[in-house]
Image (cartoon, rainbow, N blue to C red):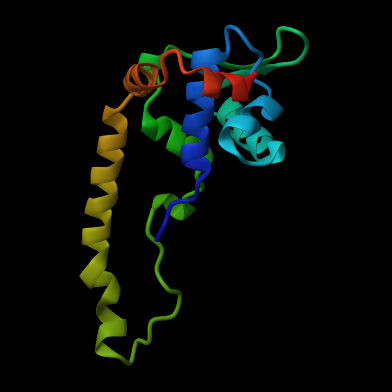
Amino acid sequence: MQIASRFTIAIHILVCVELYGADTPMTSESLAGSIGVHPVVIRRILGQMRRAGLITVARGREGGAHIARPLEEITLADVFRAVESISGGTLFSFHENPNPACPVGRNIHTILDHHLAAIQHTMEREMEAVTLAHVMEEARERVRDSSPLHATIS
């Protein structure tokens, strides 16, 4: 199982917007250059984050994406929920037709459901504990005065 890359792309977008948005309009094209994906992917994720109230997007010379709330008020869980679609609120999905005539097939949900729910709860709790401010603290430390990245954004 692997979570789709939308989540990490969304975090990458938010870091770029925070680091460089004051100097350079953060457009889907400029963000795509840093992230290495097509601008359409960026626009789709920007739209999801805009609908979730995490960013604003403006057109024109002063346009581009801007973070809509204080960094301390945005958690990794907020970003995850904005861009990842989780069917029925559960991270783990089951194969559709376990055989009820098989002892394992008949009991697999009972065997696993509580474990998977606990794992998801732990992941959500950890994601709630990390804010965008935490991520930005590390990002600023690691990319400080990093002209190659900034050149890619410009």
